[in-house]
Length: 83
Image 1 (cartoon, one colour):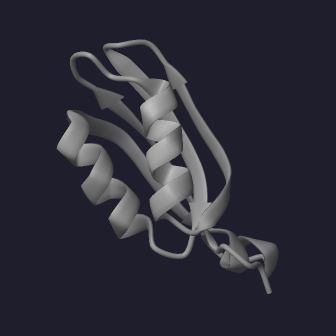
Image 2: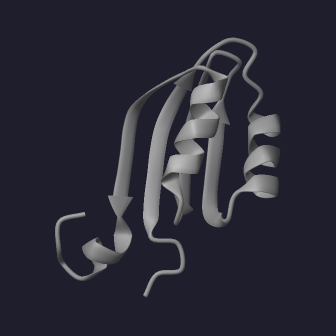
C-alpha cells in the first residue's frame, strides 16, 4: 500500500504569492511527500502526495483562485484500476 495515496495537483492564481511561504506552510501543516510548489507571485503550480487532498485544496483556495485541479488515487492506479 502507498503511504500517501492521493496525487494532488493544481494551479493557484493570485497576487503576491510566495512559493517559499507556501512550501513552509505545507511542510508545517500537512502530512505528505513529493511537494512541488513553483511559480511566481501571480501563478503557483502545486504537486503533492497526501491522504487529505481536501485540506490542500482549502488552503490553496485561501491564497487565490484555484484551477486545473487533479486528484488521483495512486493506490487504485497501482492496482491497474481507474485513478
